[in-house]
Length: 132
Image (cartoon, rainbow, N blue to C red; front, side, top):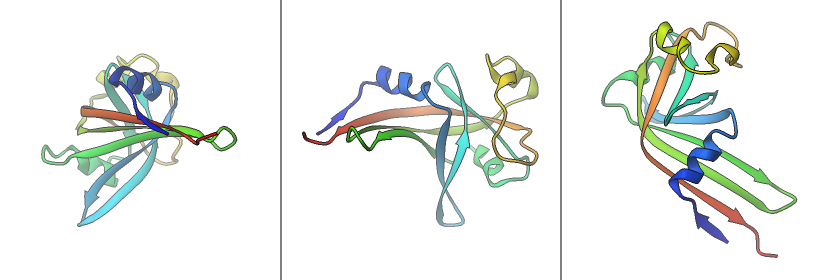
């Protein structure tokens, strides 16, 4: 059985984990990149390489998708939350003002000194449970 979740439930689940995937179109190809993240209010904060592919997402015309999910094979259940929105660059000062940002380090190696803020324009989610 699949059910849609409320926006509030989606936001709670978004805060329940720290790894998601950001999806976008670049060079006429869909790209999906795993990232660890932090939630600030309704926004998602990630840290990227200043010259990496994610740094190009800050153009005002670029729409992105951000997805987090969880599944339990034994229980036959899972959930998925999907955000749509835009990405903007943050200053180091803005990042420092985000609660918990100083304790959250990027998992990817290399220079991840570019903080990015994904501001959602849509949020949706679904739960699924296998019939007993």
